[in-house]
Image 1 (cartoon, rainbow over the protein chains, first blue to last red):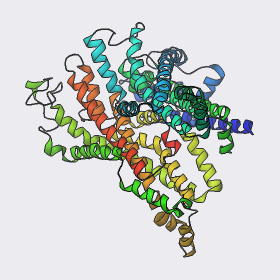
Image 2 (cartoon, chains in turn purple, brown):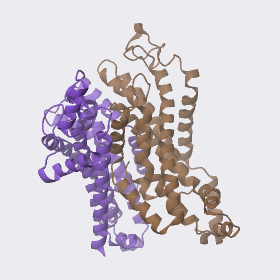
Image 3 (tube, rainbow over the protein chains, first blue to last red):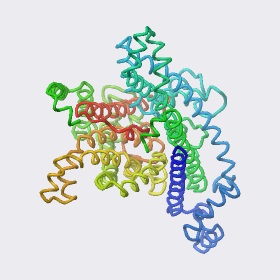
Image 4 (spheres, each protein chain N blue to C red):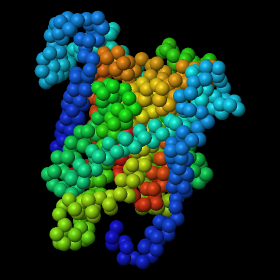
Length: 310
Length: 293
């Protein structure tokens, strides 16, 4: 049973990937300025453009070009060439992915640690004012846009105190502000998530039993309750990691961080379609992989959910 | 749910819970009210016209004449933020309308028909949900060209699954109710049953989703504008105001401060209103709508 379910999930993931690659290809392929336009420049005549289009294979039917593109990636690892920098896209993606992954993994680790501790403490109820405070702060942290928080941090630490450089990626210090900016809303989300699930779990009967046995409240939350509410939390963490990758371009643009997200935004402005397609496809694939991991993790950690879904 | 209503004590309890408004609802309604007033009355209450350039007062810090200071062209920031409330609300409405127009009919179809139709549509939505919403929006904007309307339409398309899921799950519960059977016995067709009997009963859930989503759209619309894929100069969109303020972060920090407060204010108001409505109307928002994005 479980195997078929896994196969079904994997099938859906492949379909998602297919759909997003088609969408990206369709959106950029017929975009007003095609690659030949960008390459030939403003002064090129119509005949020159037609020749260039033929040479680049832009006059072939849509599905042929799509097949050629996907085939190139799958068979030869060829993601095309950037129209602006003339570098192979695969090479660009590799270095940019490393930069984005550094940012995302560090942020996720910090946010998860803080989120588990603070969320557990808020649910633990010994101080109602602490719970109220946590709810209030997370509400504001979730409403405040990251691009604004980032600007304020830049103003304080880069302009005023000169602790970190305003732009550029030189050393560890330039990592600090983007990480903090990414962490704030993420931590707030995880805190609320943990709090909700722990509160639900605290109403279970085994909690009453444990209390009757004299287990202390803190030990109860840390040892029993958190462990039992782990499955939905792990699932949501995986979803949020995917989401973090999908939305990372805002923070990357703000801090001029040379990651995948900034590559996409820049590529859109430069009409550098091979780059936008490659980076979009890579982010999409990572996001889909995270979703799949979330589903599988939930099934493994909580067999009940797999039963329910069937 | 129906069975519990036979117990008179439960009914009384439910009544008291419904008559006392939750504090989040009050606070959310208050903040959202201010946002709506600012948006509708912006031309009347703004001290200066939105695009009035005063070359003599470029980048002047907050003072008596310009309460929140001026930007690099000498435009009054306070007036621009007030007008920005219009764009924020309009954008959020465009986004939710798009998501609703796509998601509600499909959700109603799946929920009403069930069976094979439901399986097919739900699988499709599952695939649609598998793609990152901001990436879909970015790619669509890249295709259509950057503008606030395009950005909000794209975000709406990416958010349609939320509407699909909530409508579908409500319809699945509602269509088994006795009154639906009664209406069918009286000769009402599926379209009439859906429009007259089922959809009105989905309204509380849809209202909650719409309010919460509008908050998300103010945030995400601002994000797209901030990176240059949404509103274009000289529009006073909040995210764009922040992007423009970034250029003079060292010399004119007020430009990076106040538009952000406006966004936080608006998003907080709409989110709290949504949460308050959910408590008050006793709507359990499905897990799908709690997904990130």
